[in-house]
Length: 118
Length: 118
Image (cartoon, rainbow over all chains, first blue to last red; front, side, top):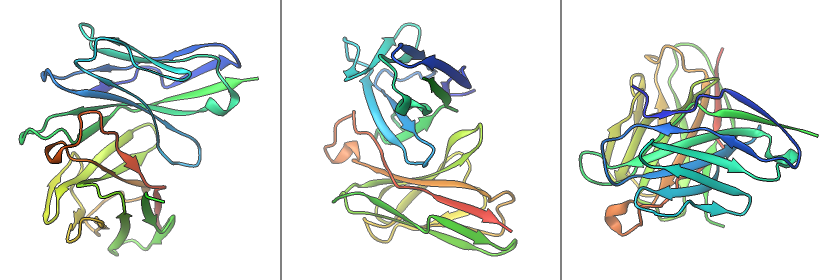
């Protein structure tokens, strides 16, 4: 079973509008971290935002916010006021404890290709 | 500036040959990872290392080998046993939680190496 599920292979949004990219996850651990990364066509991975499993408030970083619904195990990324430069692949990822108790294994979803139209 | 350097950016290999991808970081991170990215597959974990002289298999380790003789370096060898080696390879590093890093430690990525078997 997949740990991270991104159900939208591709999304389109008009410039200046908001868009939500979906992410659901599967874990039995109580302590975990959720991340979103952006990958432009150049291939580099850019960290966008983080949400901890114990965080009571949704994370925000500039135009990025994370809609965290713990009971539903979802961590959707919301991009407000889309810009042409936001066109890229977006990956949701989860960090959870391994058998040694160290939180360093990072598992990624398959990604969503976002296209911002002018 | 601190960061992760992968080399080369593009690599061509003849079928049946081993090839080694370089990954160096000067961020003083304990944990390092290798991911493989194929179109539509997202990032899949090949190997990871928490500390020098120790590493663990990820989800798709068959046909690959690694070493961690120095904290700064985590080279990946793609062996002739890897049946479909053509892919984009990404190296990453992060603070290991056990050495005092917080849970919200994102992974920092290199620019990637695109390997093509000819």
